[in-house]
Length: 123
Image (cartoon, rainbow, N blue to C red; front, side):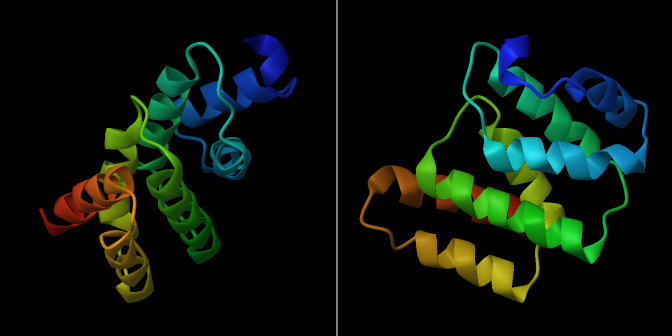
């Protein structure tokens, strides 16, 4: 598992857990890379939970919106619920339109995930 991560990942992970906003960007890098390995879903779920607790810049919000859209299009893992929770915080008109478009996707799994994201944004 550690070979799949950058050498400074764990200190940044622990900093994020402690509430250090300076560690948000490296953790967004991790979410954008979306590595798949044993236990990666658990790590991503934790990262998403901790990011959701911290103040975000507009740039960070845009990056995270793109991550949520991409994950909704590609696949749902054990951490998908955390992506849905984060989507509620990231909602704006353009982001909602992007997710709404996915509700009409040809793939039923993409439609289902998009419905979950919209459902969470509507809570």
